[in-house]
Length: 405
Image (tube, rainbow, N blue to C red):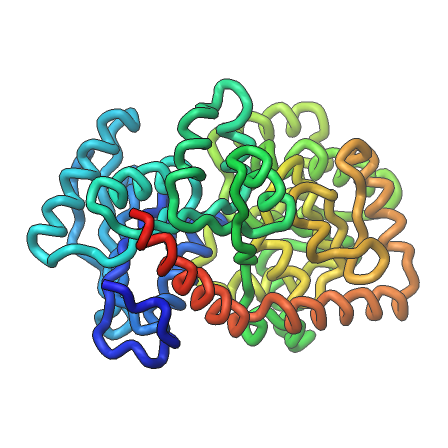
């Protein structure tokens, strides 16, 4: 079935796309959020989308009833994880076979994140002679290319896919070096109507009071999963350093992983005063709630050790936050230091606290200029309207790839 050479508006018969993703909203993390956003965007291009994602909250091998969204165009199936992938993957293939037997053959397969979803998507697609797209999202390249990662699996996945997308120029370069092929740039995007600077001062004051944030405290913000790759130790060190000069708190917009709880126990012992000013929201159900909390930040911090193009950073910039970020991954695609925010080199992250103090000392007029530039840049290049054009281009590229199967 060759349809993707046509303008998407001209497609009369709705094609069926299978999207595999390790996580899918309301699961936490950027992969989950981007998977749902892309799935919805694909339905708007006249595709019927079925999602298979995995869950730790179901019995191993159990397939839950589908969540039906977008007027029936999007169905989300959650499959219970086994303890190891060598059990989960064969069972997933069994489920996919059953789905094909009941609903008919899929037309396109999409693997969101290179492992495990991308690898399994490519294998399933090749098994059934279907065109397949794999999407590199963040640290999936680095996790697989270095020990104990599986370099052979990474290379095979990249080389066998009909099309490869990547969220940043950095990932595109790595893919070309590792596989000898080019990837298509498919940046993360943001709903700039939801993530905006608009908020009443009374609303912000009420939310601060509810969170226990003092009026004289500088609010340092971080959104997402606090973990090692996101620079968790540097965030904590920055809070300690800033508190030596002025009152401050660290607002963590999201949940804490179990391994992070262990780190925080040590931090509480070593720095009890700073630990007392850690404010953790827990999981927030809606993007609107995330935006409300981002607007509280005097400075938003993204000290990633490695990354793709963090959704959280784009959301913070769209909210008009004053941002300080590392130079990891695709962050340099979106921030030119001094214009839309400020960049601190990865080798200097131990000085993040000093950078925060310098940022807090920037005159209000200059801060507003940087905030406005950040918001303007996101609206111009990372809004939802950009997603449709990219997805149309990706699907169109499958025509030549399909003829080679």
